[in-house]
Image 1 (cartoon, rainbow, N blue to C red):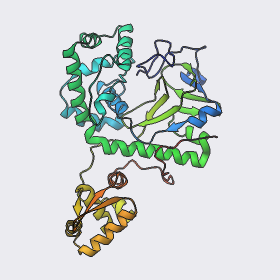
Image 2 (cartoon, rainbow, N blue to C red; image 1 turned 90 degrees about the vertical axis):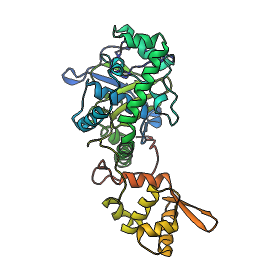
Image 3 (tube, helix red, strand yellow; image 1 turned 180 degrees about the vertical axis):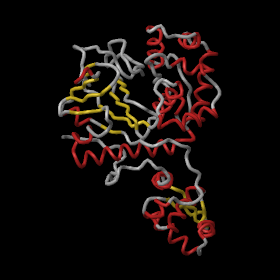
Image 4 (cartoon, rainbow, N blue to C red; image 1 turned 30 degrees about the vertical axis):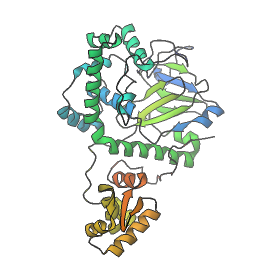
Length: 371
């Protein structure tokens, strides 16, 4: 993916670029000569419009690399960059993939639950390396990747795995919370002001006039969705607007967080926000279950300093609320957190909360329909 377009694209042509050079019609300038990507949206386009509320970890990893490469460093991410730079020493060669206006968009195999590694012959990788070649930006390392040299591919996989372990994994809860908050806020804006209000509140560089979506970028272009869904992807490690037109969808990446991204907290005691929501004892019970999956009622009682009967009552309320699940093994009852319970515990420790007055819809991915 890149921020500038150097070739014409179609839905059937794989591309590694995020923002494309103008390929259709005259340059699209805003007032005062501002460069814009302009997308005309039909009623059907608006019906298909989505805002993600879960992170795309491949984008997060790629844009994290962009931050460390120093091409557009964000002050908000300064602490994250410093923390990562202290712990990651494997490789400036990774930055060979970040040349001029190009950002790699083929890290999916590294962020999977069971990492599969990078395939340099995959369409996204091939497109990215082709674009580097066309711009004269190939280095000896990226040329070896383009040629499929086993040693270069192994080096890239080793660097990316190390980068993920250092730059992404210790921050996943923070990143997830930031993206969920951005997605929830968008859903609230849509509920209050319709799709018009939502689109005009996503980011200062995104605007909507009722017919045309405008992305304030470093290039000018006019794009058509051609039946593809438009997806807005909040991204915690992004510092600017990105545009990724793929064969089956078009994605606008925008910064998800307004505060710093720091390491995920270690759970020792429930956060004040969680205690305010559940009560001190019940919040402590949920934290104990999240910290120790398969926790027995007896051990829960000991952790809370209450009787087994009281611990069982607290567990019943948490279970009925969908925050924990319970299984019996003979005479012993074990408790484990649900996804909702885990997210609630970790999310309550994060400072990236919606603006005052903005609630959170329950839909996992709000699909914003109509106007």
